[in-house]
Image (cartoon, rainbow, N blue to C red; front, side, top):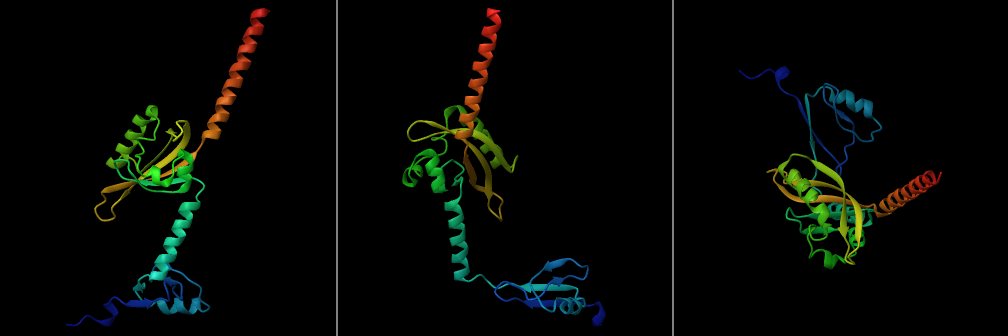
Length: 212
């Protein structure tokens, strides 16, 4: 026999306008699905209470929306006050901003021919490779550590690097690293100057005590 109407799941399909709904929608238990401005919000909510499920139909993004999104991403990427980079799992740079190029002293055309291993200070490489291994293995989701790059002119530069691994949405296999690089050379120089000053003062005190 047919199912009585009162037992059937009541579903409301709601279309939206350019990705924005015209009402605040709630499920029967009061969980908010989404929200937007609406002058008759209370009236709409009362009407929606009769439904068990609300299906929101979202339009596919238009080309102009995609281009605008890409434009915003590129502006944020290039104007960031820190270095930003994506690299393959074996260390080849895929994408970087101008700030990273400034930190290491290479042009964009030069830096893409390097791996991060090549521009890392030899004394810091083992630690970095271990972090990379743990990220790929899934032992950690992200990491942050201090390291030195070797600039094009041969000078070391201290940075704080925060890295994570980007995984395929379906297979969850890692396919590249994403990193934020902050130049901390000024802070390191100040710390070293303070250490030298404290050491100098300590030596003076010890010399004074010897003379007494």
